Length: 102
Image (cartoon, rainbow, N blue to C red; front, side, top):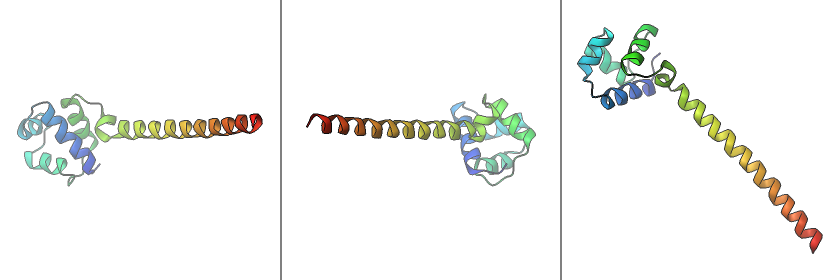
């Protein structure tokens, strides 16, 4: 997986945990240059490296890949669409009540 968002999440979590690039690279068995390229989205990350990064950053792989964020965003959109539909139904109901009392 080669993904700028993946790299940004790696970097953010690495910084959040107070790890240097060299330390995280050593823990994951890659060079510091490779980790820099991963963080910049310029390196295709194999599954074993992705799992190692996730483990050492205390994240699950889905979170590191951003799948949790996409799922949450979809849930928010779905909720907004349901609320909008309810709002439209209530407007129609109110309009009907006003028309019958007028």
